[in-house]
Length: 100
Image 1 (spheres, helix red, strand yellow):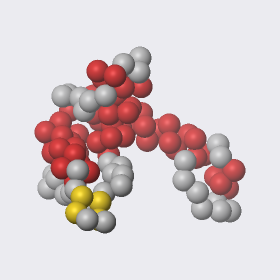
Image 2 (image 1 turned 60 degrees about the vertical axis):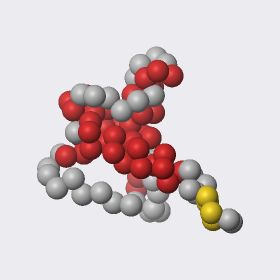
Image 3 (image 1 turned 120 degrees about the vertical axis):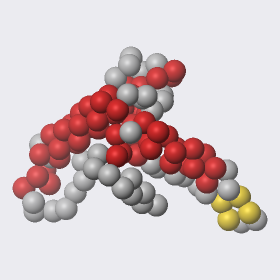
């Protein structure tokens, strides 16, 4: 699913980040006969993981921050780390496709 916030950097708004997270819980509970949702990976889940990791891995910090600037900083940290990991990987020579 792709959600367009309709504005530049709208993704950093806590309210916008929390809405898909709420939908994720509803979709994850779907089950009808043999059809069910096995796993959902969202940007909100990644953000919650980052937030928890930056706060001494405390379970109570597994949440989407309420601060727009903090969300932006955590995403920047994640993107920078992912790029650094990729640039130091064997695939950084562009010989083979790869993801960090």
